[in-house]
Amino acid sequence: MSIEELGWTLFAASLVVALVLHRRGKAVRTVDHDGEPIEGIEIYWRPDCPFCKRLDAGLRGSGIPMIEHNIWDDPDDAAVVRSIANGDETVPTVVVGSVALVNPSARKVRKTVADVAPHLFGADHPG
Image (cartoon, helix red, strand yellow):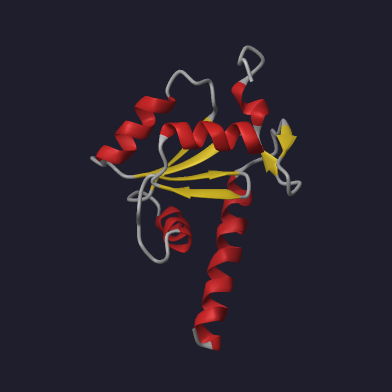
């Protein structure tokens, strides 16, 4: 990797962090391991994506707050996904605090939430 490519990679990573934090707003319940506020998981998706539909079905009813971003509606959201997925627009892409997951299973998302932001499950979750 050249110095120029490394520079663009670092720029893209910092852009992801800035965009995710910008979208969080101020109503925050707690912070992740890095001290960043988490009010819900960020799910990047696109219409007619069967993997997105499967993930949505697996997470509905979990009580986890989801902030959904259609990457076809917002170029900034598409840029976030590309910066996480090595230049590809692979969806679903999920961000939980400082952890990014590309095409995860619902089980992997729930485990990540349990590890990084267990407060998102709510009081009636067994843990």
